[in-house]
Amino acid sequence: MPSLREVQRGFVAATVFGDPGALAGLGIVAGALDPAARIAIYRNNVLGNYRKALAATYPVVRRLVGSTFFDAAIDAFVRAHPSRRGDVNRYGRELPRFLAAYPPARELPYLPDVARLEWAIDQASIAADAPPFDTSALRAVPADAQGELRFVLHPSAQFVASPYPIFHIWQVNQPGHTGDDRVDLGEGGDALLVRRASDGVVIERLATGEQAFLAALAGNRSLNEATERASGIDPSFELAGALKRHVAAGSLVAFRAPSNASSGISQ
Amino acid sequence: MPPAMPLPTVAGIGLRPPHVAQVRRDRPPLGWLEVHSENYFVDGGPALAALEAIRTDYPISLHGVGLSLGSADALDTGHLAQLKRLAARIEPAFISEHLCWGRIDGRHLNDLLPLPFTDEALAVCCDRIDAAQAALGRVLLVENVSAYLRFTSDAMAEWEFVAAVTKRTGCKLLFDVNNVYVNAINHGFDPRVYLAAIPGEAVAEIHLAGFDASGPCLIDTHGTRVAPPVWALYRATIDRFGAKPTLIEWDTDLPALDVLQDEAAIAQSILEEADAVAA
Image (cartoon, rainbow over the protein chains, first blue to last red):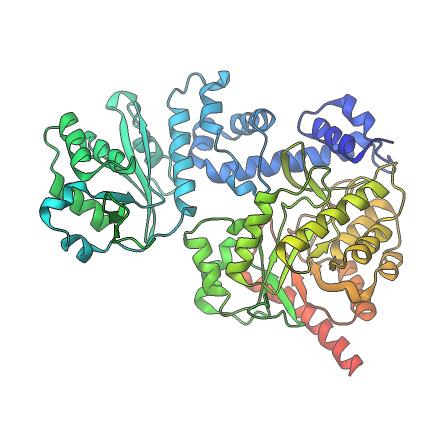
């Protein structure tokens, strides 16, 4: 008699991998239906669940490639990248990388970056909440000390950059989109900030200086260091405007002094 | 930790994401609500905020699908920790899971898969349930699942396996009447034999749902109304165990909320008949 582990391994081989040899070793009672038909029910359920779950996370990818292509890609993905959590909602982080190396998708070089954007949107919707920025605390910091402050991005904030116009591609593939749905791949790349605002996940294009600024802040650089980096890349970068805008929008949620002394964020 | 609100012995419904906004806005008369635990394994955001608002208006039960109590792998401690964190936040009346497996060698299949009813599988399930109950600090409800195959290695009937699990671990039973019916048809047994084998004092909650009968065996889709023979089996279940909190589950092809309320009203009328007889 096979052990429980052997039965469960054989079940994976017979369902996910469609291995007929594994089916024989499982010892399935035939009855009115033969064992292959019984395993096929589970195979369809298991793979179908993943197709459905990943279609919910990656609707634009699915729309771009069509449902037949998508389903085949997901089946291959499931075999290559096992789910490591009992929560299927969080499955699929590796899909962008998988698609980048998936030969049938070679003609769609922008596809992995669109997938990264969709994963970022999904993650932003479930990230931790943050209290609003305490602007009065910031005003209380003397102007000459502000340059050493560190700023905290909203927990949902993520950067997605691509040499392709992925935001435009994403926009014309939204269910409510009307009008021209052509995208010129030569129209230029995108540097995007994805984050959750009070009314849902938002995507915004960042200028190169602004992106360098926020990325430096996210990397725990001081306001002065972040400003230097941004100005080095983009001479038109203007600190006061950028800071004000990202505080007001909620991309920045707190600041703290360089030492352990905290200000404006509850620890 | 005591629940914020205990489950009343009435009919409730499974709350799914498309109905959340309506329930939150209209606060319709629903006895209690059950949600899938894993849908709230998140750090924050609108879904969790909505559940935290809803729990102040309705008793809540957390129903898990991913703990894999019957896996040869040890329990996924990360999953258990997330469940514990969610329970601390929601203070549910019940926490339930399934008597099945879904994970091996670290790979989750994210499905409710059938166990061989062997002594080894029984020992594994009891060990995992003991561990889960210890970690959560409370009694777990376990649900009998529907199955489309049986193993030649079975050493006992499903009802013997289920009864032994409750007896050995002290866990409670989430008795799914639809799953008993689906298995009775698929594997050819008399569901009354199943009912007779279950210790009534262990039954804490009942599930009802619809199945799909278009293929060569019944599939537990949770995608239609409760079938007439399942209502009949539900009456027999209430006759045997007494009135228990009863849930209408609907997951695929989810209809408007009032369809679920209609189904819950039927279950409620059967519960009230039983109360009238008992009184």
